[in-house]
Length: 170
Image (cartoon, rainbow, N blue to C red; front, side):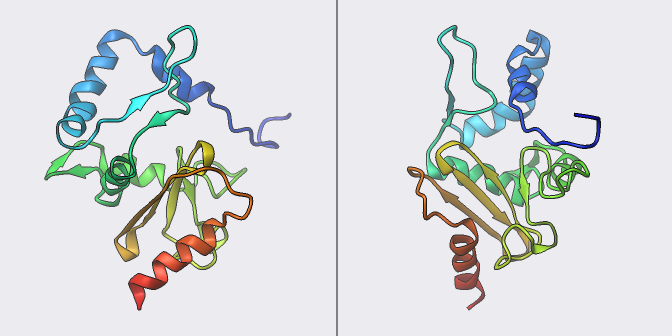
């Protein structure tokens, strides 16, 4: 397709993270992974048959661990008083990243103009993964919610998150 006329979501860029040079991996590990791992993160990544980490999918974590990751974003990249993700990055990654789809940031789905989830505040965003794994973040209501489970044809993010938000407002 001609540049600017089509949107394609592809895991290739995320998969390239697995190919970081050792020095870059160590910098990432010491600035982000170490503080998270020490206090909250026991997640693991799935690998393919060649042993390559599947960085574009396949995080194996508990609902509590996913919620803590959402909380890190809710708090602007601060974990236990330490800025471990740039506040600018958190803000930028949860804004529209391109004109083809204003409902997608950097690996986060957005509720731009309330169009994604009409029953939810416009500042909501979510990580939406394989098998309908979800991390929902609603900054204006101080909410982080997680959904784990098997895919369901009747699953409705708007209905679920709308009920969660309504329960906080009431």
